[in-house]
Image (cartoon, rainbow, N blue to C red):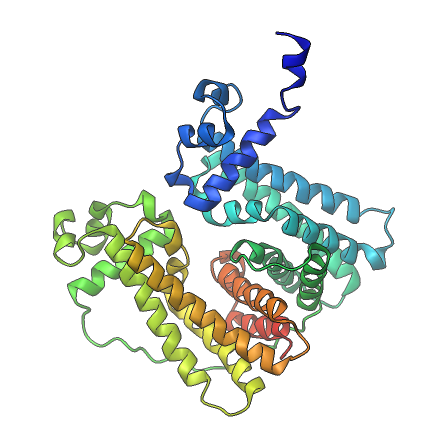
Length: 392
């Protein structure tokens, strides 16, 4: 090989290939991308790709773990004696926000495709996440020494979700302003006052009698999709969970995609009903506060809602996918309209970014067992959403 040929190669071919794969994974979902797709997009052959990665799972691990490397480096650099204790949180949040804005695909892959990593990589990510959150909580407790340790952990998880929210939408503003907005929102979260527990009656049961077989199948599919992911569940698995033979599931739903469509519409209907009730007030600020509370109550009590968020990663008829996407966008638009009315100084794009940050906090924390089991969780989550929206 000549010197010219050597110099024409990118210095870090492995990172370049991983970046190409990351964009494909984000656009199509991990199951929808093959090694040949990555090789073609990168302009290399399959064997050339295998010189750097054993398989596409290894590529996903490389991309996600590199994001954790960056997060750990930012944490170590900010939470050091070289930075004044009073400034450490702001320095940390600024670096994390900058990373989130500049590498949005990392958060997206961690959020949506992490279940496809090898078990040992998933355990490694969980371990490193816990260590990072513990370091953040320690810095927060240094600033707020009267805060219980468990509350500090909850607030740090919520702050992490603010940065992760960039993966669920495509809205953007100038990078510096985008990062500063995320920092401001994360600081609002870390400075939030959580509500004290208050006695409350158990919600009444709305189920009478035995659910129909169709409802049993839908409930079984919802649970399995939530725990294992759409692509790792078969119709036979759903039938077994519902107590019927696999082929019998087809009497109620022609395919897994049809089940996902039904789950998505069920979630949308429940959100729409809750929003309609919340908006029965003439005061816009009150309406936004009520809307936040309605969302928390719905997401805590509606397993279909958490599953429906991954509908865009599922193979289903384009018409159904477009319809579900339209419903989601219309719902978010309600929040943005109200927030813009309550806070007219906030530009439209920043209002949308803010709304997505609030919703992502709810979505993430409701799926995080470590915090979702807190006895006052719904009230705390509602308070956090209102804080982010500026109507706390």
